[in-house]
Amino acid sequence: MQTVQVTIEPPIAWVYLNRPEKLNALNEQLLDELKSALAELEKNNDVRVIVITGNGKAFSAGADITQFTQLNGYTAWKFARKGRQV
Image (cartoon, rainbow, N blue to C red):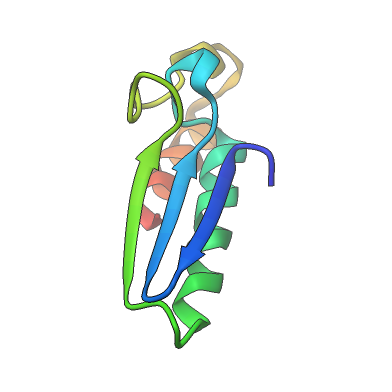
């Protein structure tokens, strides 16, 4: 994973959004990696708490709007849906 880092210190798992140069703005890759990381942590019986934080000076700036210029109506809907699922 490039845009999400996970550290486990039972019973706590730390999930770091890792796009500090973009203030951890959410793009499709980050959402996919975050969803995958959370699914894996859910299976881990040693983890009771998940803390999501951001590397750098911001937790997250929200959605990465620079990628919006590449989206049409359907792909924008899919991106928004993916964000809601996470």
